[in-house]
Length: 465
Figure 1 (cartoon, rainbow, N blue to C red):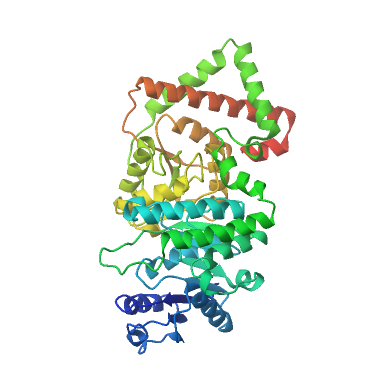
Figure 2: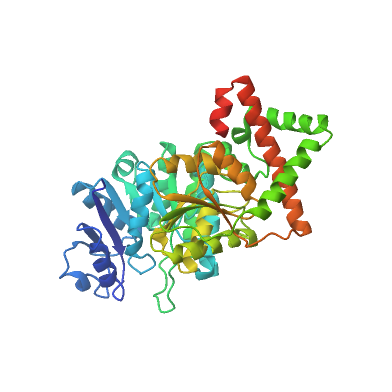
């Protein structure tokens, strides 16, 4: 159970602050507004509301406002602190999304990530954030989706266990510094996709791209120099996720061994075993029914590698199919599976959720999983989710992908009805190439599974079933 306070730093937010505070009060009785020396009557707008108001006589910068807000929240006994900006960029109505994610990761920082909504973000802000993401991810040693978002959920235990201080120069640096210091004690951040809200009549941002990104970069550079440039952090945050082949930790020695064994089986059977897998994929893909699923279901949506941080055409087909299902009944829900792959700065599932939300699906209808990087891991994580799920399951993907996906689902004891994205399959040359790739991976999977069963290799069986 979360006992949380909402901290809102504000500087000259006369036009937006009352509506922000009123909406925040709908989610917590402990709303703390820190007026950082405003000269436009910001405080007067909320004096009649049940809010804890902290006033700075002069402007001290966002860092000072956050630190004062953190102190007030912890003094109230809050075990969680949620921060959001007072300029309307963050909607308090997205607070439940952060709380839901925090149930999965109660010890981590939860960040409302806006960068999936690229079209809504001013170009200069978008690319400035991308630059900051690179440096901060390096210093943290893991990929961060939106390091500059001020819409966050902090466990109080994290704030109490790291040294944070506020100076004028840290105005827009502190939030990045918290992520780095938290990473040093083993605390990561988890992203939640939220809309990017930039209204045309909004006041100019207090964030100055060149100045503040320079300050952030200098802070990060100092942290990196203290750790001898922290090359392992660079590798884990950027090099390893960009590796096109599955990394060692994913495949493992048993994976590489069964890959060689699968190739040997194909060779010894003169390719017959592989041809059989191709025929099975093609036949099953064409015969899958396109019936509308029942009411009150959970759609498992398999992610797919992104193109320029956006779903490609095949991924959009999967998502469009599920969008139609979710809109057909208010009882249907979706779980999108897929983490960070290739060169993307957002996860497959976050991009999928953003696409579905842009097409009219309420965000609360969609859960995401952001750790898996291939179909096998999709089902490893889906199996964990299924332990608390009693809805009927449907498995949504492209026709050429579903036969292998269904085989893996069966291996993990996940009983799901296939839900093909396309009404029918009339394979083109491109589709046939995809089918041959799927057949190879299916052949590899079954080779490993049968080998593990024959040798009674429990460790390997645990990974693939």
